[in-house]
Length: 170
Ligand SMILES: [Zn+2]
Image (tube, rainbow, N blue to C red; front, side):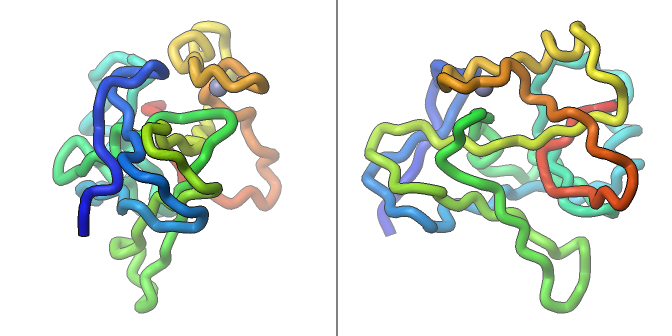
């Protein structure tokens, strides 16, 4: 199979991932690969790194985080957008093993060759959204309805399920 996507410099942020050919809607393009860490392991590992607004961590489920810093592929370079053309799809392991759950990046609409792939990171922090945090996690996706930050307001605690999504250090 010929390559459908490739990483290169992005006008949004750092590196991005771009469609090399026209791609239909509903196509699973790439798995978000990386090493499985527990949330506690991820906290320990990245406790002393400064907040840069950049994360290769992806919350897989209540137990595990995918760390694309090691064993990752180019899916880690896909940028956030407030009007995304892809989504991160959680595929739960059929045997119920949370370590074997996977995240696939799927197109939400047809992509034209040359378009940058984006999805909604859906980052929810456990702390209050301060101006400093919003500045660190500023969004430059350029969408007309860009909300200016990658961070989502904290969900109501009652019955809130932890959702798969990119994970910020907290
Ligand atoms: Zn935006």
